Image (cartoon, rainbow, N blue to C red):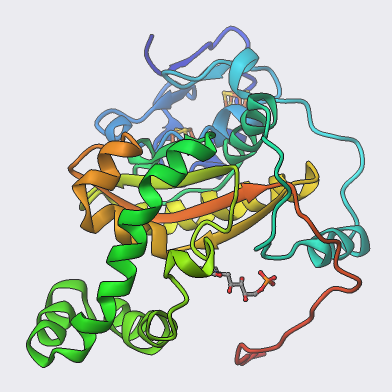
Length: 292
Ligand SMILES: Cc1cc2nc3c(=O)[nH]c(=O)nc-3n(C[C@H](O)[C@H](O)[C@H](O)COP(=O)(O)O)c2cc1C
Ligand code: SF4
Ligand code: SF4
């Protein structure tokens, strides 16, 4: 199937043209809507034209009104309800010894299908390890890698190469955050699992190295997953330490069945929270500048 506008039902309202982010749709010299010749290749397949069309006249290749579009609720979530919901989410580092059904996992994954995306979201991959034993089989390798960061950072030559290869943002994160935590012995398994925190499931967001916008897309998807988990009574913890180990160690990639040429961006520990927090936390770390 190709992109198509059914002119029998199109009312020429031009809404699709107005909302299209890439000016792919226009009016031809007969006054009819059409996909502008030569422009279809820049369509980002966002689906907005189909979402706005009153008569379902427009169709984008690969999308169907039945499968990809949902009826919208009558009432919007009000701000107070929204804040109440997000104030309840916490990074959960203590989980019950209780497995998660694949049905719940699928609902979390479904929520990601409503997320915004940067360029080429088709590169994104999500691996769910819903098996504590598999997670545990990778833990000694991950722990060893995280402990070795101390020697890496304390060696000026290795430090120089990390900075050059990984970039200044990653280098600063390792030096200022992961290194002191690792030096304190936090990642040693004798202290218990302070990496995946005993979570029964892990969700890893990854893509081929160099894939467009995959870092941003992964973080947005993980945030959506985290909020969906909260709505389902699950707790989660975002982390970059498991991805760092995945990226460094082929053996961990193998255990988690992540392709060798992929880069993991972020992962979520997922499980039933052991504790219930008594209050939400409101922080204002960010600097704001409003220009009127
Ligand atoms: C990108 C990112 C990476 C994170 N990495 C870790 C991590 O490696 N270990 C950890 O315990 N928490 C990690 N966190 C969780 C933060 O520490 C947590 O969000 C923060 O302390 C605020 O607490 P809250 O989520 O309960 O509001 C990470 C969070 C984000 C957004
Ligand atoms: S939104 Fe639908 S009805 Fe309106 S111009 Fe586009 S295809 Fe035609
Ligand atoms: S899918 Fe998005 S980019 Fe493509 S034609 Fe429709 S509105 Fe434009």
